[in-house]
Length: 437
Ligand SMILES: Nc1ncnc2c1ncn2[C@@H]1O[C@H](COP(=O)(O)OP(=O)(O)O)[C@@H](O)[C@H]1O
Ligand SMILES: [Mg+2]
Image (cartoon, rainbow, N blue to C red; front, top):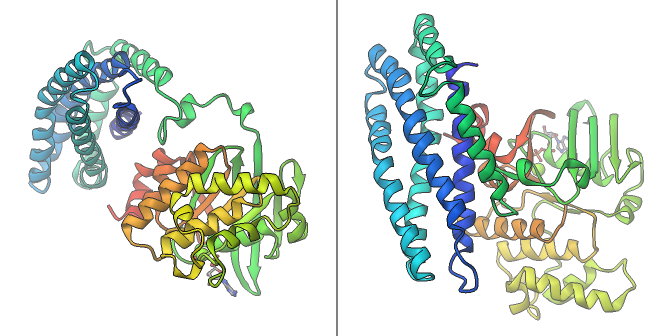
């Protein structure tokens, strides 16, 4: 394996650790809970031992050194990376001290600890992203084949006592203990590792090699996607990539010219739209179309129009209000008076009132201010926590990838990449094309 690939893998592990840390921190502060100091401790061990002892010195001794020798272009950035590396021991020691204090005086000290963890996480993530987006491309551009030979040999030396195979085995074991003890749902990066085996999440929607055209314009050319039950799957792509067309094809309002769509074990490639609704597919269209003159409550009731079980409709309304508290506050107001973000929530809640098996969301963040986007994505996370299966289509790759269990990238009608959300977030191709970094 090449050095950059090794570093990239290590980055992904570290990113996962930041996710676990974040999750653990969120659970702190409730008086009835105790901090999981064992798990916190293992993560700090990992950072101290692996990151500090293996990852950082190796980068500095080989990659940074070679880049600095070839050009002064990376000087400032490498100085910053080195400073950040040098700050790791202190940062980890501080976190350990604060963790001890939290454990002793719980719940006192929680806020200070949480803030310190937050700062550390942000630093680590920024560091990782910047290395991959700025340093890697620079290294690729300026290093010679001979440089790479030397670097790759050093990184690949499996007998090296410090960072050879035996050290790696030790750290892999530690990582897998962390992963297995991590709370569930763990959020972004660890999903594939901590979720129950795939057979417990049967495939709900499977799209194979789908194509579709508007007259002579071919909008979809070989889309292959799988959505498992209970998962949040994202499809990201630029404007005009074919995202809406795909959702329309899944809903049955867009003609398909090749390939197949399977839903809940049935071939629905040519099923009528109303049959698909009855099977449990519900699309929230682009541009959140709520009924403006009707109240929030009546909009929700409309979402249940196909249902006759009056009692459980009331229960579901309560569930929607629990999931989207703002809708409860405004249940008598006409939907047209809600803000864009609130209308988006109403559109999602209304769709859920039909008890769909699969919810299709078309660019819920479109046209919303950053804070509202955050709110909408929190709502989508809570959908997943309530066990809903969601297929989310977005131009906002950063936001979508950071909450998705699994994700696909679509380019001019073709699915070109897939992986877990966190894998794609640190994927260089994705970063340069969609994340603007
Ligand atoms: N009604 C239409 N008639 C003709 N071409 C269309 C129509 N709708 C979309 N297209 C074309 O299909 C392609 C995919 O569009 P769309 O699915 O809306 O992309 P996205 O939702 O990813 O922005 C684009 O090239 C677009 O111009
Ligand atoms: Mg669209």
